[in-house]
Length: 495
Image 1 (cartoon, rainbow, N blue to C red):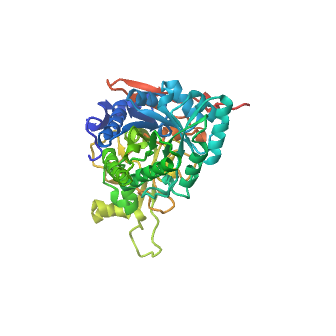
Image 2: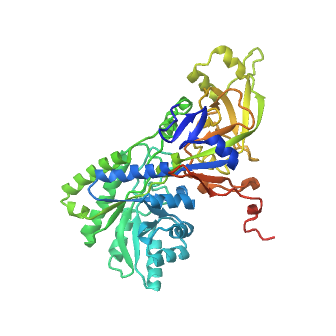
Image 3: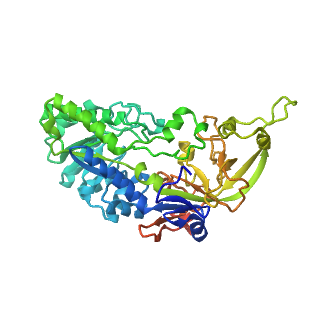
């Protein structure tokens, strides 16, 4: 199967195994829905990023984006892998320090930091607070003066660099909510570079997530250097780091069975794959040429390049196991012409074209076969908000042919809690392909869902948040989040 990954995801005894452990055994022991993560895969992904340092002539600092998944055991694994951390709230900063990251390993992003969050970051003396506006910079300077400390800050730029990703993941456009204009940043350096309470140590740029090609990174790196050069020429201030952000893509379409059910732009998005080393090699070459032409290569001496990967670290390291709890059969909408015998198939008809299903078998599709699972958008929010695609297989029958189309939905009392696109935008396939005769109690697996799932879970509909387990390097299974009890649903309610 194309979705198999050597020494990680494989078929054994017709079942899906992760790191040599049966998913069916895990589902029986811990119940579903259940998130399963691989410690070894997370470390592999971090090493892949660190390897890119060989292709540039400066120090590389990998700061994992905690927003992708800030479970404490995941953060611990990241720290043990030698990576550092990007946080986006006071809560993530607190967790980072609690799990053992030191202040020099932490950078703090965000558009709407509170006074308490800024004070905590200044007091901890973190590597850099990424400043989002002139107002915020003034606020940081005031708070640092009050605390009698010097705050390390990096200014986030928004230079209008467009990428071929989802509109909600575009973060370097003037229409996005992030960052300040380059001329605002220059003005800030003119005003504050001699401040005793601000260490203006870097500039930052993030072009967005799931970026499918390397060119925008080269544009971004060149933009950072050009701004570094202008800052130096006008103030004489030399920066110590440049932050290129993250956004390296994950191939969600390793298995191409349903690739034809996406529009080309969506297919390109979900199947994007670029190696970080190739991204940095191209970007460094462009910056090196720019520096030489400007006779300013000395500004790259002793510079540190920061990256903020999130998705590319944890997405393919996590899967979600879910159980079919109900099934039903529905007739497809009939043609208005009563003489027409066959049902009108929705836009999912492309399934039959792609699979070359014979005409006599197509006639069976006068009914929709529905599977209702225990995993909804309360634990996989991106499937609703971004219409994100997670490949679905049978964990119990992983080795069997997946060619029978099903409508698949979650358990929530919400019509949008489905594994397809009800709005007709063709962002997700209408049907998911699984083995024949899937019945209640069969365990299914959603792949590549380790990023922006656990971090966004909610108790919508009074549903208990699921357990999470981590398969350690030695094969030991560690429970890293217990399943909620009904008591946990009360949380901080006062009644």
